[in-house]
Structures are given as C-alpha cells and as structure tokens.
Length: 176
Image 1 (cartoon, rainbow, N blue to C red):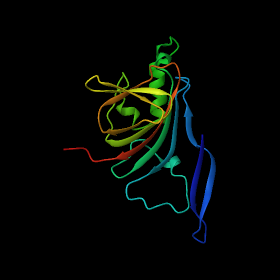
Image 2 (image 1 turned 60 degrees about the vertical axis):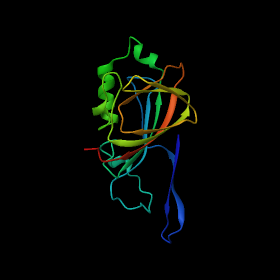
Image 3 (image 1 turned 180 degrees about the vertical axis):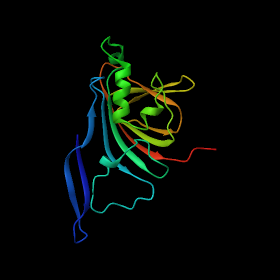
C-alpha cells in the first residue's frame, strides 16, 4: 500500500511531502494474512498540520479521544485461519496488544467489541459479515460502507479469501 501525504512548502504552496509505503504497518505472525496499517491520526484540538509531519509514530492508542481520529486499513484472513491447529490465540492476543493498544483491550474472546467511536468502514476488497448484539448478520462486499455508531459488533470473514477494509475512527463522547 502506498501513502501520499501533502503539506506546504516555505512559500505556502501545496506540495507532496511524502510518498511511499505506510510506515506503521504490521503483518501478524500469529495469524498469517492479518495486516494492520495505521495511515494517519489526529488528536483533539490539533491544528491542521501544514508540514505533513507523520503523527503515527507518536500514537499510543488506536482509539482516538473525543475529537480525535484514526485512519486504519485492515486485511482480515478467512475465519478458517483461526481454526488452524497452529493458531495460538494467546500469542495472537499479545501481538494485538503490541500493534493495537487501546483497541485490543476491548476485544472479547469471540472478536466482538465496542468502541467509543463513530467508525466509517469501507470494504475495499472481498466480502465480510458484520455481526451485531442481536445476532443479526449483514453481508458486505467491495464498495459497501457501514457507519458504526459505538455499537457492539464483530467482523466475520466466512469466505475463502482475505478481505481488506478501510476505517476512519472518530472519537466521540459516550452517552451518559
């Protein structure tokens, strides 16, 4: 995946400040085919970055605070990868903690989770099923978009191919 970042030169003109691979990308060793990429992040109240300086190395949680955001692209292998006898869920949990602090803390054993965010999810390639609390399953394919409003959910890849999804997570205040 290629990431192009724009900014401004010393004269205030728009320029490309970086063009290359996503610097914060991880191919999981504990679950082959699972790839997590943090492309960009902003923190609450942060002014527009005119230089295009990369904020991703400073990110300590994939969950943005209210008013912050994260742009993440995930590739998820078929669910059958977790049924492989070589799959070690404990080691995978440790790898998720290292790669996805904040978000990994909210993952339940079955992959269900609830985040204090509004998420815009776009299926870029493949097919996936969105599972909600009530057991409802919604099939999504390339081009489909889901608006995730802080609800408990899980992603299920019942196909035999990986699925790639882009997510923009926007930190929101929880209902009281």
